[in-house]
Amino acid sequence: MPDLETPAVRTTRAILARYYQAMLDKSADDLADLYAVDGVHEFPFTAPGFPPRFEGREAVRAGYRAAWGASPAQVAEIRQVAAYETADPDVLVAEHVVVGTLPDREAAFTVPGLLILHVRDGLLTRVRDYMDSPAVAGVRPQAD
Image (cartoon, rainbow, N blue to C red; front, side):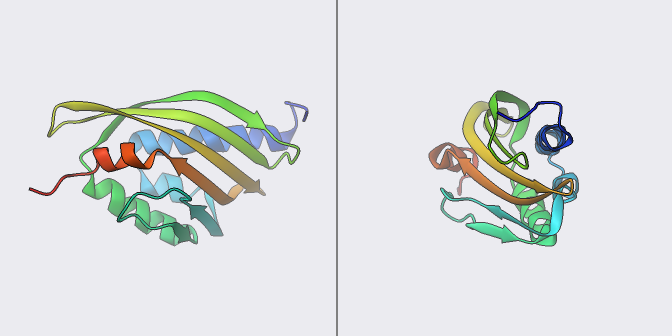
């Protein structure tokens, strides 16, 4: 088990906290700024109509700006269920539940997820983002 006081562990947890804050703020810029220029964000269980990956910081920025800009969903809270250090101090696994509302439908939602964060030199180099795709599909705007 890694020493919880090592800089790498503090860095991965600090980046996770900033990642969650960017989600709460729906700030594509704050999220993208956490990534290395060539960082990759993957969605292994993607919802229909959502890309399987963003390649590069600017693709993360553009992709999240488009997705969050098109969605009326407001994230109220991110409940961190657990965070796990791995044998590699630059890798952190985090379980969470996103809780929010859809103002136009006056409905609440929850979306469980799991992130695997790879960090090098204080920046995200790879994120594998496992979201509950059916829950995400229920949050997306519906066609009339």
